[in-house]
Length: 123
Image (cartoon, rainbow, N blue to C red; front, side, top):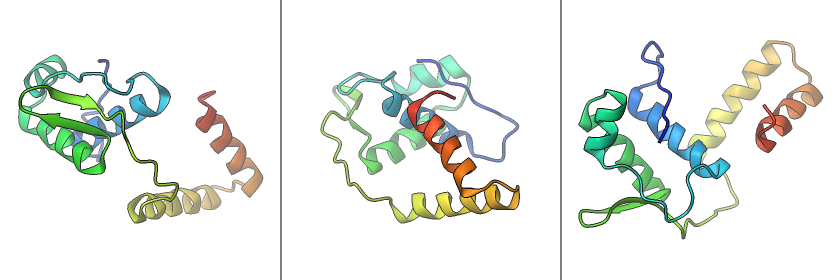
């Protein structure tokens, strides 16, 4: 599994890892039912503490993106329930992104064009 972390970022490492895995699931790089590396193996591969990987995996498990147990390890959840509504956390984060785009001078049309490109994976 290829993970790209920015150790200079203000975003905590466990959250960057969580985000990379969510993106991988979303774009099909990580398929439903696919087994993820063990906590120890992933931590060693990317050079971070095992507790950091554990925290990311626990968050992903709470959110329903993965399921994990001691016998089979962590796998991408193949029965993920699509809610068809944004969580409050996601909605709040999106409000901030929209506000920043407005302050940077983007029109609604320009912003939506960027969103469409990102959503379709063209950018």
